[in-house]
Image (tube, rainbow, N blue to C red):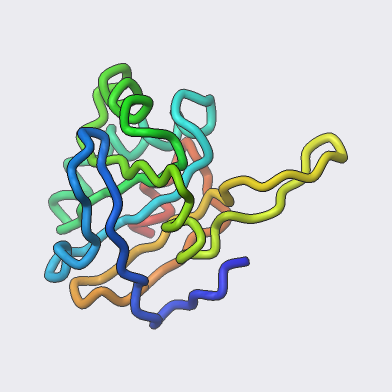
Length: 150
């Protein structure tokens, strides 16, 4: 369950990016960050969301945003996803789901009556001081940038 609220400090984390390099949220202080959690590389909704962010990346950069996508896929899967769809932003490999847990997006879900644990597709918009300024829980994958920029 997401307990974070607008105005909270974004929880700091250290993880790996698609190249296996360390990624530390605190190194982005001074920049605005779009931290988006998605269920799985190369699935239809996740691809639509990533491609919408890709297609609007210049606008996001112009407004000072850095984009970080997070899923529980590994680095190799992320690199294939980036290569296949020419994604210009970093993907965080949260294989142990520790970042998911920090942000409250590893949740019980239900499909066809079966309950399972999975990623609640959620985006956190973080300001230059590391504070959460928006939380989008009802993500529209094909027009996500519009939701972010309002």
